[in-house]
Image 1 (cartoon, rainbow over the protein chains, first blue to last red):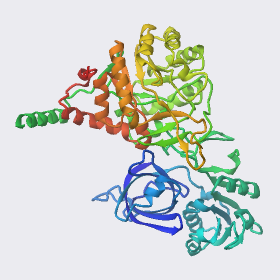
Image 2: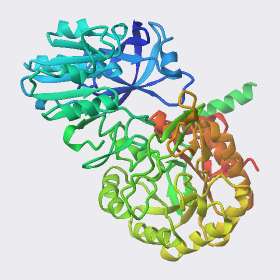
Image 3: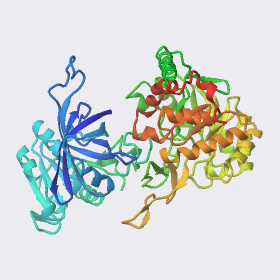
Image 4: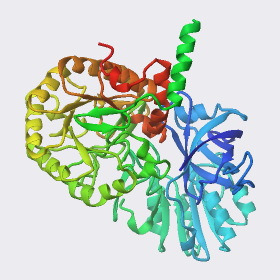
Length: 259
Length: 321
C-alpha cells in the first residue's frame, strides 16, 4: 500500500453514466490485475474504492537518483459508474487536478492458474478489471476469450479495446439490442475454456459459478470502511474462515466461496 | 508583537532541539507520547507496520476481544456520514485464545511499546475471564474494559449505561489483575459523570472515553436503513466537540486519569483533548481514511506545542479547567 497524489490526465464519459478516469502518478505499488485504489474526494469522509482497469508502470521505475528517485510516474486508468454522490462528485473533476490515492490495495487475480484458454467474464461495472487481466494473460502467452455483459447496446464500452489486445470478445446484452441476447451465461454456451475469471454483480457471479465446470477466481464488491484491512467493515464468510473483501479479497478462489 | 514572535521562534527552536516533552504517564505506565490508535481502527498493528514503523506511537489499543470467536454483524456494516462514519462491525475477533496465540505474537514482532488490551464480554464472568487471560501477557500493560460497544445485544453497552453494572464489571476485573484497569465508557447516557464516578469508586485506575455514538443513516433509494443492523456507532471528526465536552465533565468528576478519544484527527485536536482533561489521546476513525494519521499526529505534536507555547504535555492535562 502506498499513499500518493495523482494528476488527472482525463476524466471523460464512455457511456451514459460510465466514466473513464486516466491518472498520472506513482503506480509502483500496483502489482496484479484485480487490485483497487482508494480515492479521497473533497467533502467526503470515506475514500472511494475503484478497481484498476489498466496500469502502465513508469519509465522511471527503479531510478535511484534525481527528482524521480524511488518514484515511478506511471499511467493508471480507472472506469467508474456514477451511482451516488461520491462518484457524481468525482465526475466533476477536471484534467490537471490532483487526487489523493491509496494504491496497491487488495488481493488480485492470479494468472498462473489460467491454463491455455481462460474465460474472462465482466458484467457492467465489473468489466474494467478484466482489461489489465486480459492484457497480462495475453502477454503470458494464453488465448483468452472475453465475455462482456451489459443491459443494452447503449451501455456497451471497451469492446474494441479488448479486441485490440488480441482477445476473442463476445458481448451479451440482456435486452438483445447488441451481440448475444441474454446474460453472460447464455454467451458461455459452446465455448471451451480452461479456467474462469469473473467480476460483476453478485447474481452474475453466482450464475457463472454454477455454470462453469472448471476452477476460477471471482471478484466481489462490498461496502468498505478503510479499504486496507483495518476496520473489518467488509468481512465475508468463506470455507476457509472469515475474509476481508478489501484485504484478503476482492478476488476469491471458486472453491472457498460460500453464497 | 515583536516580542511574541521572538517567543514563538524560540519555542520552535526548542521543538527542533527536541527539548519539548511529549511524555505522559497512565497509572505508572510511561508513554513516549500520548498518541494511541483506538481499538477497532488499527487491527493488531501489523497491517500498519507494513507501511511505517509503528514504534513511533505511544501505545496501541487492539481490537476488542471476546471469549468466543465472532464473525460480527450482517453486512452492510458501514455507512458514511458528514465528517464521519457509522460502523456496525459487532466485535469481529478470533476469540481470546487465538488473540493470545496468533495475533499478539505478530503484534509483538513489530511493536515494542506498552500495549493496551481492549476487552469485551457478554457477562461479568466473561469480562473477568478474558481479563485474567490477557493479564498474563507481559507486553499488555493496561486493560481497557469496553462496556460501551453499541453493536452487540445483551452485552457491551448494556454494562456501560448503568452505573451499578459498570461498577460490578470493574470490581470483577480488578479481582483478576494487578495491571491498571481503564473502563471505556459510552457517550449514549444521560450523565456520564455518574458512571465514571461509580467505576472510580469500584477501583478503576482510569477511564477511556468516548466510544461511538449511536447513529443511523437511511438509504433514500431503498427507503431502508443503510446498515443491516439498522443502527451503529457514529465516529469521526463530527463527534469531537461531544468528546471534548465529556472528557471535560469527567475530569471534574473523578481523580483517576482519562484517555480521551472521539474524532481526534490532528495534533491540535490531541492538545485540545488534553486541555479538557485527557492524560493520553486515542485516534480512531482518522486511521481508516488516512493510514498514516496516527504517525502524522505524533510527528506534528512538537510543532503544534511550540505554536501554543507548550513545553511539556504533562503540564497541560486539564489545563482548561
